[in-house]
Length: 282
Image (cartoon, rainbow, N blue to C red; front, top):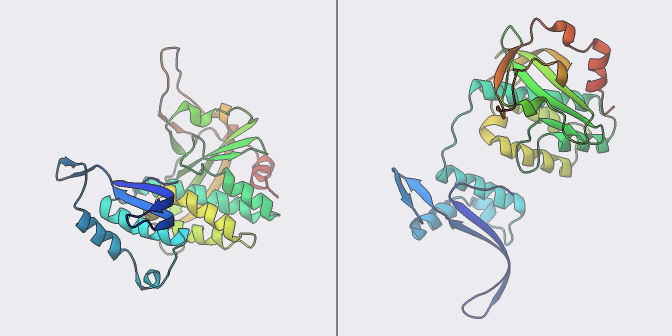
């Protein structure tokens, strides 16, 4: 389901070769249009590409007669490193992902069944990429947008009004404001949180695969990050309608803004209601 820069990938169920032989289950990987040195190219040297592809097979893969989907994903991941340089994540991006992973871990700690674990992982983002709101729990009719800060004040950045609007078939919308502190010695990294989640007692192989699919859209440099370590300080929830928003009129389609929620403690939900959200899948 993932698209790769400069690669065209096609599943071919049946192929007849020039010498009339039939081959089944073919994965066709071709180079597409690319940019190099400021110039556009419609193809690359096929011999060079073949060498690059061949270099992505380690000794274990060479002994296999048939590759499974995980093998193919590993090869494509290596090829992507050749075809596109992925920038290192910023501090703010890691802070944001850390908060989302922490919220998943918190929900799982209060989870009672493997069915509920699946609902939690399914509710995070989408299978094919990022959703407008971070968590969409359909059977609970609840949406949760996560905002995380490592600063002293609760200053959060919103990209769109849609991040604070309940969508159709959802009754409840909450902003989760998470405060964390950077602490290399005592803190946890994004990689640590991923490990904690995958080692949950109710996690099975299918759930792990689903979780890893969603992590892939975040990017390996993000979810395996060990540069930044944080300790948790606080999580507080606020109804979507209580989050301060800029005034807009009929001529403005959308806005992005920053809001300081530090002086709005009275708008946050009380301790009991916070617990109800954390134990949504208990």
